[in-house]
Length: 215
Ligand code: B12
Figure 1 (tube, helix red, strand yellow):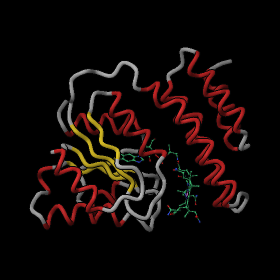
Figure 2 (cartoon, protein in one colour; figure 1 turned 180 degrees about the vertical axis):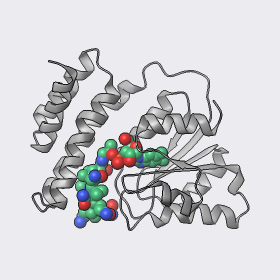
Figure 3 (cartoon, protein in one colour; figure 1 turned 30 degrees about the vertical axis):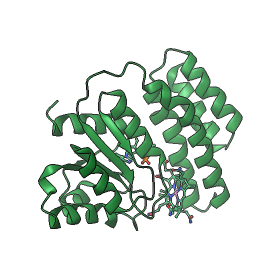
Figure 4 (tube, helix red, strand yellow; figure 1 turned 45 degrees about the horizontal axis):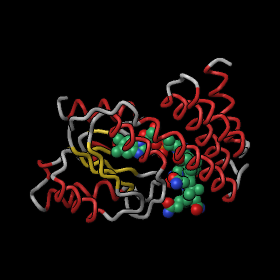
């Protein structure tokens, strides 16, 4: 089976909410010599985004969205540990990452955190639905270089801006590079927040962090 066919099959399994097939294909990808990040982004990521579209179009309802999220999460639990293989021993920098308060979407943020970790960064992943204050407290405590904030809902994006406002008010804005992510985040939003950048995928996130820290 070609890689493209495998990605299509994975995406179909997710859209069909076929957990058994999705897990079987994840295991197949692990056992074969296939770039797992591509499997995640082009197979699983594509499928779950199609579920989002179907939900938006009224074809799917909340239970389907939730089941899709659960299957995706289980597949990530299998795949993500394998991305860590080959990680470097020296630390290239410290990254505190979280999904902002009010927002429980964690899949994309976790993929980004795992990829950064696999590429030699120390990553402190605080999870999802995390208050701005808690993210900043951790960044200060760990003397982080980067604060990464994910938001998947248009209603929670404002929390990304809040992080920067709090840092400015405390006169510690220049201690950290703040990067944003999540499907609704655009360059315009990054500029409005006065953030240091955003990335639309885990590969781009690694490139962004490396360029910000000049690694
Ligand atoms: C799966 C999913 C869920 C799952 C989440 C499970 C989980 N543990 O994460 C569940 C079912 C729980 C869920 C719940 C809800 N969801 Co939802 N969900 C999705 C869906 C289908 C996919 C998200 C996803 O995992 N994508 C795959 C990952 C790999 O992509 P990603 O998240 O974009 O991440 C990539 C990049 O953005 C980037 N990135 C991400 N984070 C970061 C952070 C940094 C720092 C950087 C640099 C980069 C970066 O890199 C990642 C890797 O490639 C989206 C549709 C979509 N198109 O996004 C809707 C979507 C986000 N959900 C939506 C909604 C409305 C909801 C609910 C409000 C539904 C409801 N009525 O209850 C609730 C939210 C409750 C809450 N308070 O948060 C809407 C949001 C609409 C809007 N305009 O705000 C969407 C867009 C669906 C739609 N088309 O309408 N959801």
